[in-house]
Length: 350
Image (cartoon, rainbow, N blue to C red):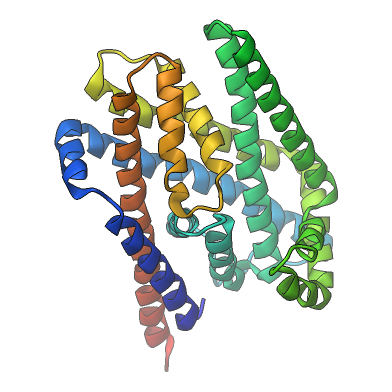
């Protein structure tokens, strides 16, 4: 990626991060950190592991896309001068999620960054295909996780009439989402998403000329998506299982925080808290860092499972601090990548 774009992503993310930090109550933050103690570092360290799940999932998709396109076009699988290594991909993954956290609409920040970083190594079309497929898989895993959590709740808690109605509505939403993504894997989504954007206010002025200029590339991306799902399903299944496992393991974050407040919290309840909170927060996707939505989700889910409101507020505070810290780490990795590129360019200059 060029120096100009790297600086742009870094400055944008840093600006939003500073704005988010200024919204914190620093007395409450300090009190929460003292109360959490070393468990806060366990929460931060947990996400270093969870990003490995995300990186491996994306790596599988990149490998599948490259092999599929090489088979179709009789080209080398990757450009051997610029191999895609897991450590490098881990840095891009963390930075991409950092930009997503800071961007209203989420995917508006991290995904262009990922494509621009990956394109010099495997080509623009392969990079675009792999990023779109990874985003599809990442979101698809959320729908699968929410559907799994509905079954978990039914088997572990009593269901009142009101809860039955709410769970039925959520199940219908998850079913629709799962069907949409399965259809997208089979037919491709790039053209369909861009066609939708062409009819949205404000965005349509940009989307219409973009679609006309890149029609051939969008068709190629859709063909690669459908071919990968049809001919190499193990890559898709492996990536989906990694993402779903990441969702389940990430409930350890809530478990660690609740250990500060109570002896032996129920891990299954932690999964349910995470599921409801993520569902509620994602419905408010247009808010940077899902500010307020995530806190409200924690408060409702924790109290709904019989815990105190203060427990929900405390969990939300620690999770928010973790997000801010990893957002800062992700932005720092963009800066590190930029300096490494400059050093490599200087070394390669005769």
